[in-house]
Amino acid sequence: MATLTIRLDDQLDEALTRIAADAHRSKSDVVREMLRRQTALDALKRAQSALQPLAEKAGYLTDEDFFRDFS
Image (tube, rainbow, N blue to C red):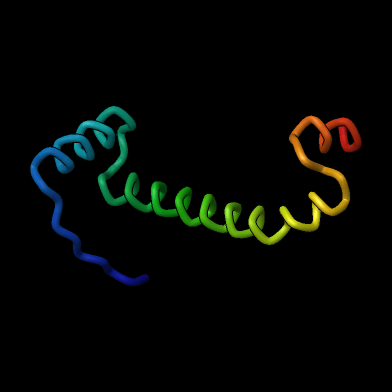
């Protein structure tokens, strides 16, 4: 497992400390989960960007178009 050291300003550290305490988790656990979520969101955005032109070509211009055919 790799180690990453970062500097946080006081306000961000206080917010992270509060989030961790409320969740009964360590700050490291909270940050790892935040990074996992962000990397998943980034992957989703990349996939959406790659698929959007294909979807539009197939006539899927809105979420409703998609759900009409796939739900």
